[in-house]
Image 1: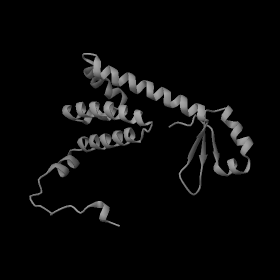
Image 2: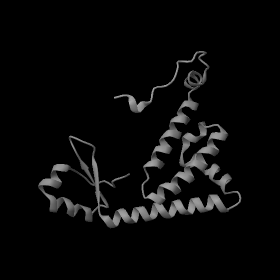
Image 3: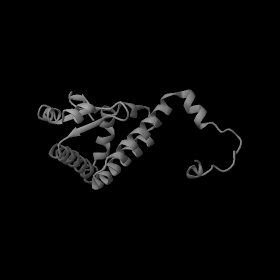
Image 4: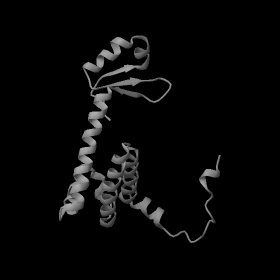
Length: 159
């Protein structure tokens, strides 16, 4: 998420809260830089609600178009490389699977008001495209190694 330029150290919010919060009138978001943790973004509740409304509207329109309009999936498949250039490395079947999964996940995430699953989906598919873009890596990951290494331990059991 872009911060449109305004950034301060977190300590400014703590020590000069009125002056720091006044900066929200100049910028829709304020990046709070922290030394001991992940940076934070501060915005007003009204701005956050506006942003969610816009994302929700775009998601609903995309999902409705993908479900109802003949040829809309072809259009989506045609424009995906403009939005996500890395999809050019995906095989055609995977590109189609990505498009369907993206629309479905965006719709489900919108119903929860939480976009984390969409971000994770985009990251996972981008990594898949990275594998396809590198012939050596693709060969190493798809080669039959000829031996079974036994059952995979449950990751929840690893401390």
